Length: 202
Image 1 (tube, rainbow, N blue to C red):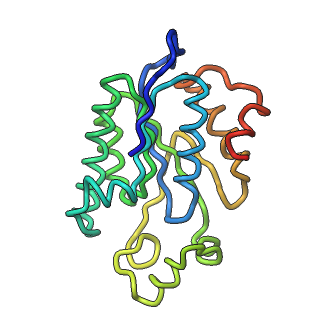
Image 2: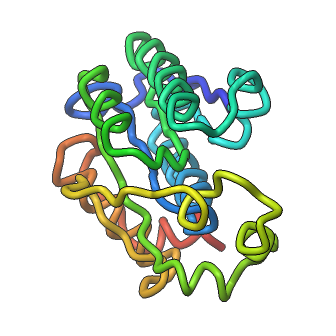
Image 3: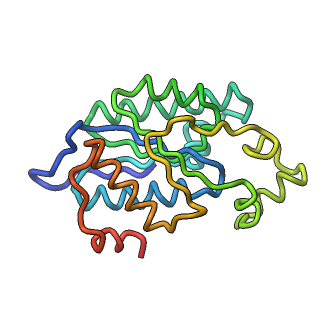
C-alpha cells in the first residue's frame, strides 16, 4: 500500500469528497498501470490517496487466503474495509484488484458511500499472446491453479462506471477517458489540459 498525504495548504477537494475507485479486469490487462497513473494525477491536484494493489494486499493483509471463491470474496471484503476507513478520513482509495466475481464487487459498491468501478477490458486471447510474465502459459499448462480467465471464471462487469479497453486504447487514451469520466461524475474537478497528463505516462 502506498500512502500519500495531502501536503499542501488549501488543497483542492473533489466535488463529492473522498471516494473508492476500483480497477477490475484480468491479470495483465493494465489495472495497476492505470491505477498508478491516476495516483500520480491525484498528486498533481494535491488530493490525498492510497494505492491498494491486489498483489501487495495478497502478500500482506491477505496472505492467509487462498483462491477459492470464498477466499476471493474475503479478499475483496478486507480491501473494501480498508478503502472505507480511508474514505472516512478523506483519503481516496485507488484499488487495483481482479475481484473476479460480480457479487463481491457489488458488496464493495454497497459498502462504500462513493464507489467507481473501472473495467479494464482486454480480450483473453490478447492477454495470452502478450503474457509478459508467462503466467497464462503456466495456467494453461496446469501449473497455476485457480487462475482467473483460465481455470477460474472472471465475470465481466455488466454496467461499469467507466470502461476502458487496453487492447484498443493506448495508456494515454485510457487515462484521458478515465479523467474525463471522473470529472463528468464530479469526483474530480474539470480535466486539466492533455499536455499536463502526458507527463504521467512518459
